[in-house]
Image 1 (cartoon, rainbow, N blue to C red):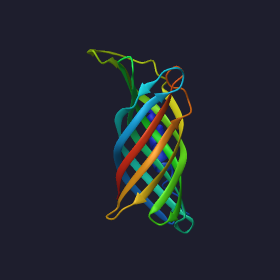
Image 2: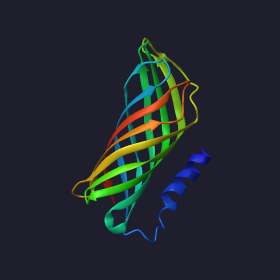
Image 3: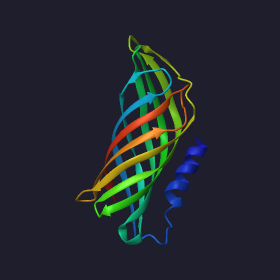
Image 4: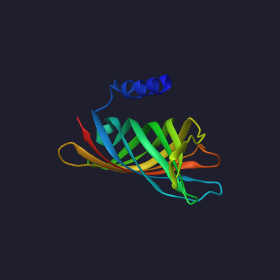
Length: 184
């Protein structure tokens, strides 16, 4: 837990002294996750989760490029066809590099480190029985997405996260995220 706190503080505050940034924004966001665990010989169905957290955004070079570190809580997992539901909850730290072809639209890509804070497996016929999954405590992945700045400091984002590290046997995370946020 101390490692998570250290990474969060360094991520949020470590970028706060970019003297070359033309614009600095802070905000909060929340949204929907459509998740699955892919790979190996296991086929599962998508699971619905959520994410929420904080962002900081630093815009450079006449507003064309930016960096956006985030600190998120993200609920992920999958539903296996054999009746099991796997839930993996993470504290995630994405670092997005942004390109703005126009002022309101951004293309975003970058790495993400995630720390497992909760894992459980439930069988659909017996919701009283929960077990731990034995998932890895750390996940590393890449993000690719886009964002759009709305009026009144609101923004929307759509993103795909691909976990490049196997987190449960031969399985890796696959997450579509849809977010609504507010910049302070």
